[in-house]
Amino acid sequence: MNEVFQNMLTRVSVKKYKPDEVKREWIEKIVEAGIAAPSGRNWQAPIVLAITNKTWRDKLSQINAKIMGMSDGFDPFYGAPVVLVVLADKSRNTYLYDGSLVMENMLLATHSLGLGGCWIHRAKETFETEEGKALLKSIGLEGDYEGIGNCVIGYPDGELPNVKPRVKNRIYYID
Image 1: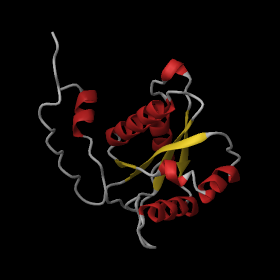
Image 2: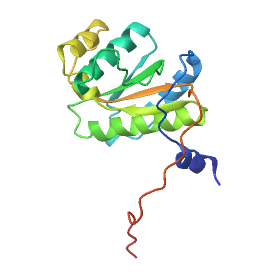
Image 3: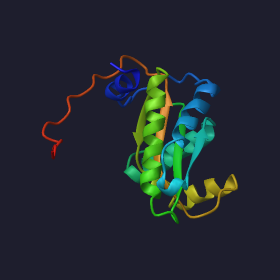
Image 4: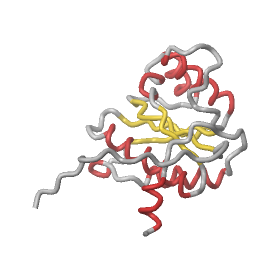
């Protein structure tokens, strides 16, 4: 089977990571694959925050857990050392779709490198909070951005989960 198809059909969400640092060059390749995703009218509205700084990573985890209603110490990022946050300019009418394509490209690139990845929701809610807005402002990022998703990546801690069977009767051919 073609390597690209094999990668798409075997990617799974990883929910337990080793604390080991991910090579910077791999993070760069993953982000590069993400921003190569198609976008409406080629506006390329999504941006990516590649977060390896533990203080930032832990702060985002804390905000995310709070939004979930979880207690202190819960890590919705499953211990992953890297968080790739996708934000998109809301003035573009395709921003949500464009950002979702960035997320998928990054997840596929992550898997192709032998790393684990998982899409973690609540990026929208995170960056609607005053804390989230302050984090963006602290790096000089201002504008009407919406959080699309958090792509957590790292080295899986243990065996990868099995690919779950696909739900039947989801394809209709119209000849």
